[in-house]
Figure 1 (tube, rainbow, N blue to C red):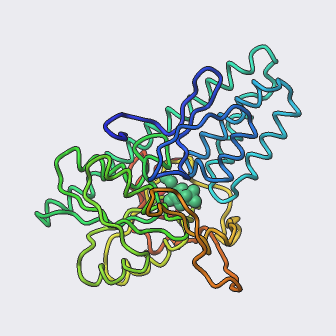
Figure 2 (figure 1 turned 135 degrees about the horizontal axis):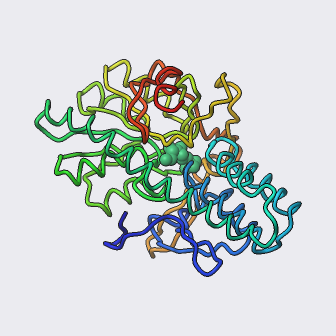
Length: 356
Ligand code: MRU
């Protein structure tokens, strides 16, 4: 998708260097950063210079490529793979991408391993682009139906950033929105600010602006009253891990939006590529939920009057804060899962019908 009219992807490989857009600096600064070592890739994931389930998977795949460039040695590659998986525990795409790479590279001799690793990392990236594009065409039909019935602008609420910045291109939750916009359907997006890191305000609103899509940032608690007032036609969110029974783990606050949507009879869709499905864990309580530094809550960053980025404390100095990054929305609150293969019920039967 575009930034200042120029098409970008979120990650690419050039002259043995991995290039990323540093998302910790958006929307105020657009900085392309070089990742030269596997440790750079691990740090970029940990510090959320790259974030979003599919993008951290792709970064991990390239992290293994960088590890081979640094030191073509199996124990080092294995250690890198473990460190990458541990760098952010909730989004399953990370583990999925590392396991896929390691399976491909197992038993390959040293002369060939770099070429194969690079091919596989590129395959992961290209596949994600196609999957996200297909999520868009599948989700477009849902937006189109609402537009045809309503004969007016379709108001869509989204949470966090499941946009192209969270993937390689198109995004998951935003892909149907971009497709609808390109087809001339009038859409307006309610963007949940998404405290504490403000991925909605900083990233989703930013990328929608760059594509010319009408959007309004709202505080995370505003969705409920907008739904009661009939100002939300549908919700679409992304996911970091969807269980085979259809339970959806996503950015903290997603669950409360789903409850409000259910209470107001508003369709609540979750968009995901198949790389986000966890076929193994059956009980959502077993999903490792990331607890992040409480400083993400107590401090906030923005531009001061001289246009300089500043971080300030907004809490009482003596207060403690707790920062859980994800929650789980039970399948019963999810109207449907929008995947690259079609839209299905949030259930084992629904998912297996498409994928097994
Ligand atoms: O903590 P983040 O910013 O990595 O969280 C991102 C989300 O929760 C997204 O909704 C999810 O990864 C889906 S991205 C297509």
